[in-house]
Amino acid sequence: MARERLYLFDTTLRDGAQMNGVDFTLHDKLTIAKLLDDLGVDYIEGGYPGANPTDTEFFGEDRAFDATFTAFGMTRRPGRSTSNDPGLATLLDAKADAICFVAKSWDYHVRVALETTNEENLASIRDSVQAATAKGREALVDCEHFFDGYKANSAYALSCAKAAYEAGARWVVLCDTNGGTLPHEVEGIVEEVVKHVPGSHVGIHAHNDTEQAVANSLAAVRAGARQIQGTLNGLGERCGNANLISIIPTLKLKSEFADKFDIGVSDAKLKTLAQASHVLDEMLNRAPNRHAPYVGESAFATKAGIHASAILKEPETYEHVKPEVVGNQRKVLVSDQAGRSNVLSELERIGLSVDKSDPRIARLLDEVKEREAQGFAYEAADASFELLARRVLGRVPDYFQVEKFDVSVEQRINAVGQRVTVSMAVVKVQVGEETLISAAEGNGPVNALDVALRKDLGKYQKYIEGLELTDYRVRILNGGSEAVTRVLIESQDETGARWTTVGVSPNIIDASFQALMDSIVYKLVKSGAPA
Ligand SMILES: [Zn+2]
Image 1 (spheres, rainbow, N blue to C red):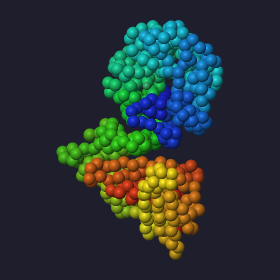
Image 2 (cartoon, rainbow, N blue to C red; image 1 turned 60 degrees about the vertical axis):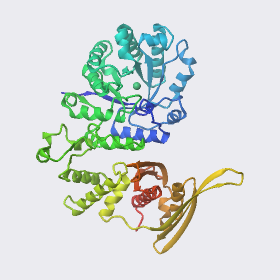
Image 3 (cartoon, rainbow, N blue to C red; image 1 turned 90 degrees about the vertical axis):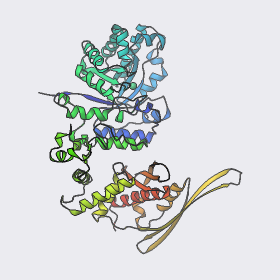
Image 4 (cartoon, protein in one colour; image 1 turned 60 degrees about the horizontal axis):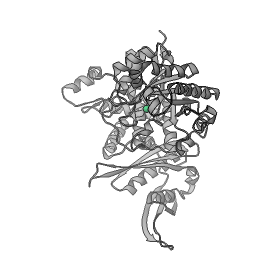
């Protein structure tokens, strides 16, 4: 039987960005969009052009995604024409493939929030959809508070959905904006809606206020909806949005959905799910939820004891899915077999061919475990992992040695009476027979060290010319007097390649130094610099 296509719409960069404490830069947005595109979601909602400088800039250039790049904004204002609404004009001009309009579908909101008539609201939906399609954009309409609206006045809520569909919207998205609707209600209401708007044009946008956003999304699909909106790690306002990191594996691994539907995420990409989830956490500088379904560190962890031997013999006895399929790993405290297969698959992914029986694999695994216990995070620092692996396998030349460095921070009153803080770094490097000393000032000690380190590497200088540091994140692990600092550095080169390196130390400068060194050495390895 041919499977039906189910579409995934990601709104991490729009609704997810509404969460307290989340503030994406343009660089963050580009990184996350790339991650989503790689994963295989169908739509990436990038933000609200015109609402803030970051979103406006994000939509200021053509972005070459496989996914449909979507701008979010309001329908035309009541009482105005589409040609006389600056907000709508900005949205129509945004460099996007699709526009997702947010529209009222609860008559109570139309009256109180919009202060207009029900008829004018319908006209606004129709006009906006038509303006978008006339401009060559795919149109989507988010029907805000749809489920509450449906309970209060089902005829009107339905007429909003129908107005959007009949005007040419590709998707009519039913939003549980307050997040208070329960799965059986969602299923019942969607069943009614699809009698008026074909399910192949109906989407679900659920919030997690009763912790059922995932369940509500699946209920809507059971009732006929064919697009699911959600976010990575369930990021979003208040209690969050539907979590795509839980929805994706459920759709792919649970037969009720897997037998009926295809989604854009391949089996191979499913294996990167845990990593995608952790990369987002690292970007937000927050500790991953150990107990997150499918991808959490403890999601497949079982304490040794009566279960352990059974799990080793027949993992299916205690696991609902295989951890490897979502890029996670089984944890049973009596065996390192799972960790070993994880390391092997990671080596394969980065293209290092090693014989499975090579004793160095066990050494690498021990090294990774020991360093992760110290605070290193190799999942988020692909380049540092690769270097560690190459070192254990004896494949990293000693390009240069840093004999010593000195970093100073000085606060003083300058000539015009202002208090200023200046940082300086001096680095002494041995490259072959050559001893090189470089000094640099910076806006902070790490910046000064970075500049000094990369100023003169003698014969290797030409390989690192295009290297730049694009992100720097610090996390203090186990606070208190025992605290250590983890530094993650993201770098980029002239080809646009990006990589992340990690350093851990009780001293932030030392942690930064380790990560900077890894980044430079990684670049030399990648550039094929001769030893
Ligand atoms: Zn929302």
